Image 1 (tube, rainbow, N blue to C red):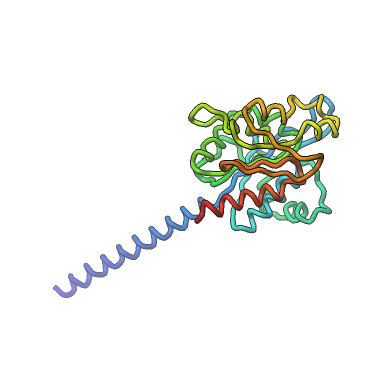
Image 2: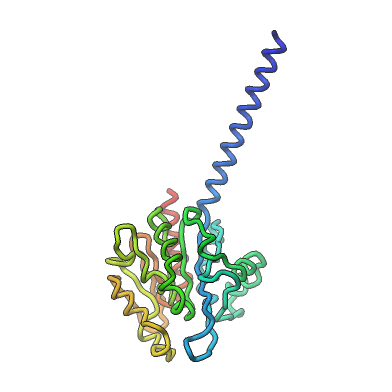
Length: 259
């Protein structure tokens, strides 16, 4: 009888052990899942019919990446077509750019971006649209990316974009049928900045005007001045000079959510 009781106690102990460890493992997995942020980069590599190369602007990836990575978040990358994303603004004298570019893990990630169909929105606490002129051609009408962003936002997550990245938020609609940016403060690359780089007649639309058309309360500063605005878990930055501050603003919102 004692041997039977001992065997039963051993089985109960094993069951408790495995149950406890499974629960801990699931808890850790759940916690880690909540630490992911999705960066969206363009697949488009030409400025209209000019033949001039473009792509995602490196500092608009690297500077928010540095802030969020150092805070413990894992960054993953998606692009409209998946695969290797074309890069613009490859200035490696910028130490943050160089850090990102020389990071083997993240360099591999951005040269092997995921396709929208491979993304589960529930895995991410935030989505960030990096700019670069290429975004003007393949962000706005990508319904798959818009759907991913809407789900992340309605799950309580954060949507951010910088420079031309807000091209990706102009057509995001929420489940109530309204545009995400309708009635919210927003900014992005200004008409004046587009004119200054002589691309106002090349891009398929002017970003400032489109953001206003969608009901965004548009804010801006002077040429190449840092300008970031946060409104209801939407963070937008005007230009490359605003990229780091966008990352910082996203981190502030994430920190508030974690409390």
